Length: 229
Image (spheres, rainbow, N blue to C red):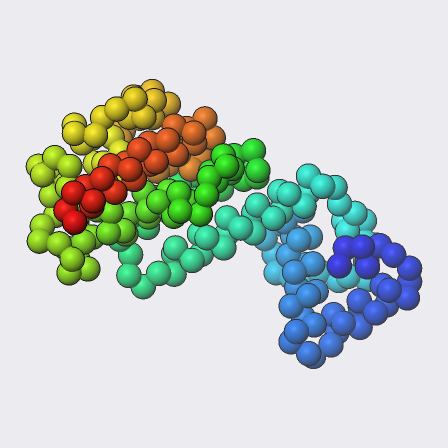
């Protein structure tokens, strides 16, 4: 759309006609262009104030690769934030995730391939386990098994002492503390164990240690499953 606005008069004229059209699908296209202009100018007034025929907006239509990366990041973050805020049933994990997203948004952190959590040659199965330890709603945890009707209690399957949860298995359970635990603990520094989600999702330096920890715990869970069978 930006390129159309900066090209020949014929193309620009077509875009103006699309903008004036009463067809909803056409308005979606021009609305996205106007929202981009609002972001680029760091303004919050409505898109109705934007007249695409003005030279000022033609000048704004020129963009760099950095502009597009930043804007795509902004759209992605806004979409996740809106989705979390609109949930009719909220839980503690979603509240924490919303806090993480808000922190990313306020910090100006750009989410790209350099800090992508799944960028370390993981496979589909491991990716699924990684997500288990992010959202926490998985039969890997005894408290969720009980909710699903597949377990008799909420105690950790490893130590049988405390309520099971991702943070318990990752950083608190004494029965599964190996080198992966020590590495993740070191990467998190002095951070509160319950804030691990924020640290993992905003600091790329923690990714490898987190993935190794999840991989180890996944193996321990499978071992327990084999013994129970």
